[in-house]
Length: 516
Length: 110
Image (cartoon, rainbow over all chains, first blue to last red; front, side):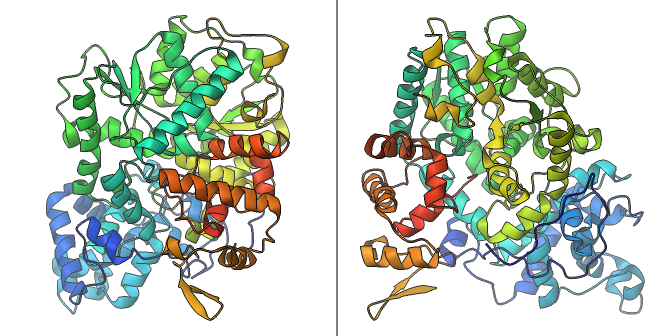
């Protein structure tokens, strides 16, 4: 798709030569009026878009103190310039975080600072009018930020470019220039309950099919209950887990863990989505509406606990904002974290010795782990600092014999985005996605060459889809990305499981669905 | 955009998914497939027909696993896997096959 060169991989991420305008042609499809209006935004660009945009910026500055601080405090030290994967992959200087911020900052200065308002001093502070060209730049370059927040780790002031790009997208939504991918999806969640638009009966059919598959594979009746009132645990997981590969193999893993733990759990057809795309467009109101579905489902089903599946920004929304968005959760069991991540849940059982594994089932693989940006830089897991890095790794090491980390500056809090986060996982941004994946592909290629790594595991639906799409562009098979709970699924020994030759999970890369 | 078929124009979105699924026909599918550089074989039709039947019942395209399972049953285990589906539809069985089958594009983290 498209006419562009796949970047050549080096040994490590090198700072590319600056190439002005290299990605100025990149912009996603604009949302159609029906997608806009479903979220309460104007259908198309409003007549007084300039006035409305400045007005909305003013509102955001009043609502969000951090936004004003971020816009005020940059000293242009340059520490962020080479930290963005999109800059490293494209060389476009507007993909340097400071330059991306400046697209909004210059308009902020023009209208909200004394020197910027006064014509004679305007040039001194780099204040500029919001012209049509600047708006086009906003649309293009604020959709070249995956809101991964890697730059903010290296910024001495902690300026969060993600928050600035969220604000810019919110302003554009309010003047009728929203992005099709995100807004169409959020509208589907309001209407059907998930990003896919997967209705209840289809979900039921899919889950029944998975139950059959597991029984065929293991001889054990493992259930994937739907809308079961009175269950203890509500599992909220990205709808990609029901639909795509390798996501679904992770879902099977959660089901086996719940089964082996003897847990009473359920999925809800009303809240059949963990992902909250409203975060990507910076809309608190939309984010709340999506989150309230989870609250309603939890109340209607009478559950005591809330567990989230493998999804990066879902965990950020859940971990960071769930209580303010949809709390209080005083009706849930206070003996458990609210909410809990599936990795915390599984790791707790492993620590207690309640799960049995045959690690040799994963011996045909050498694993590495891709830290997903939202989990790595915006959340925690467990009760120790860094739990979000250690717990997934601990799980992998508990179920696999071969594990190698990628280069230290490309993982944990310095992890590179997969290239498709923040509402950019859409076909119309494929060039950006391929190029943005370059730093991660470089780090991965190194451990493939030097340490014999065969597969990379992740705990985010976007990462999994993005990698299975872009890895082939770099000569890596699409099946080399796996779910963490897929590894759990392959190694776990269920009570009463038929073992032996006939269920031997041989080395085929797509083993779970191709077994005899 | 729009597809031109026998003198009539069939509306599609920016990415080539037709907007009114009732206007789908086998001839149109062949035309969409040509655009995607795919020559429709019996195996392609098997997948497309299954997608359309499933969509009629559930108003959504089937999950990949549901699709591979069905193909396995009708076409045998050597074809009932995602690798084979990618051979048929290189841009991905979910999206490319849906486009040819006249179904809406599956959206989300996929």
